[in-house]
Image (cartoon, rainbow, N blue to C red):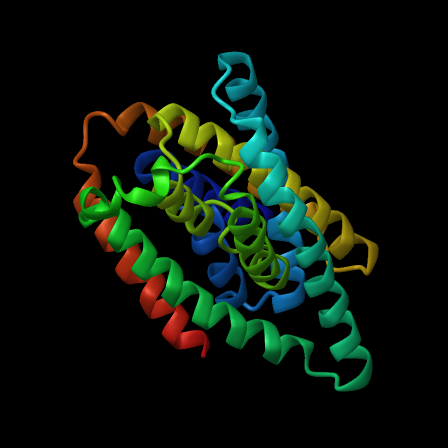
Length: 254
């Protein structure tokens, strides 16, 4: 089982490095479809994501490609919201004993949203990349940024999905950032968000540490290999194929 999990981590890491599509959107539904308890799949994925995002955040910090003010405003909304989501999940389980059903259905709808988001980013990015909202100062967009953090943070706390894909789409629309700043800011905020959510899930026993370790052992070389090949293979068709796979995964979970 450990070897199979490592190989799965290798494959997911390779696809993430190759296409930039979020690992949680690929990994969490695969774990559930393999028979892992949905609650454990979400908690474990958050811890796994926290470690991978840490390395990315350190690298972008060194490159000075993180907009700390945007990270701060998003985190003000997203971290309390994600914490609330984890708390509500635990509460639902205590009173209604339907935590797994809630997670599976929420995952299904969020995966469909992520699939649509990925297709928009892949084929329609130029349409909305430059708009009037970007001309406003960050201070003028502070309340909107915090509100977006609240909404998307709740989704991440509930499903572990969206810390990269959904936030990245919003940042493309709202802020005029260079590609490197967009990625760096997204990863830095995602690290804070998934770390807090992961710790909360761990606190209520929703993390399989052996599973997370095996996934990391496989995914780290996978990301390196995928990133190396990313400049040599056409990204758009691959992203589109993955988006369709994620879409069908979401439909299957509903």
